[in-house]
Image 1 (spheres, one colour):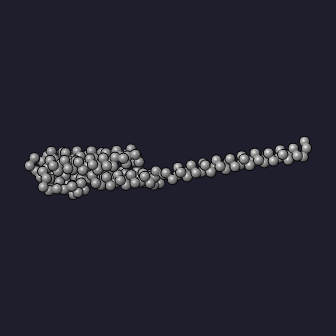
Image 2 (tube, rainbow, N blue to C red; image 1 turned 90 degrees about the vertical axis):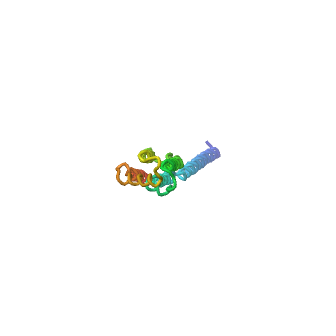
Image 3 (cartoon, rainbow, N blue to C red; image 1 turned 135 degrees about the vertical axis):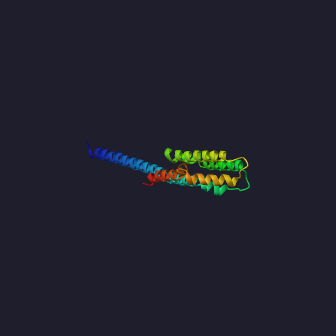
Length: 170
């Protein structure tokens, strides 16, 4: 082979190597950009916010907090019962989307708390005479929560939510 042919072959090899290196660097940049976009959509903050919302929901539907927030002394027992139940439903429905970001255990705990509190309200109001007032119902509900172990579900649910949230933080 003559000298010009060797030079031409070396130039061609250098050009191919340069093209290959350029291609690899370009692919690496694209991969890095894609990974950066994925990392920027980290669900951890959304999950923690969802757990915060569940804690707030649990607090808002806890019977003592619910009674003090929606208390209207001029109502009858049945009207107060309906108001309490509607408040729980609204709070629960408003936060239903949070189940996307939390564990099934945490969402089930919230659902159980909602169901249990609605059951307690219905059972306590059923024991009162039709002429009873909202104040009578509220007093009976608070007495029930203080004296019954079923009323402690609120604390258990908060512990479960906190436990689940701590797993996200680690």
